Image (cartoon, rainbow, N blue to C red; front, side, top):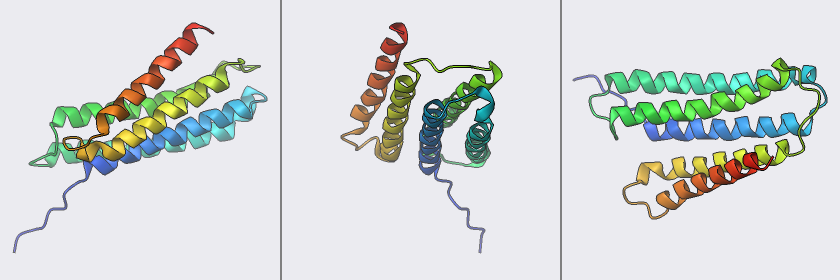
Length: 163
């Protein structure tokens, strides 16, 4: 009898990455709401880095499997591109918290919290889209979920331009 190969679930991995992005956005909000000094962010930075590390582990699993799987549910390049894009979101949210510390920020801009909350909404919308992604061919709501992500991105762009 031949070896049974466990099929890797790329869609669950994408969901896990988008959930980590929501967790990272939560930490960013917490960092802004509880901000007193840059030095006080060390514990939050450690938590943010732990989330980012989990994301890296998931990405490594994706890359390992996409390199060896005979058949993948979508094109390999698309799997890699989506995994990298989700990882970038997690990385950049962590970087914001790190920059508060590295630049020794002394006060938080009045619009920072609103911006972070908008980022969280965008991450949550992306997470909903990733939950529906495995059904993207049959889904009646996947496209609207992607549009929701883009709408939040546009709102964030507008907020940034008016700061």
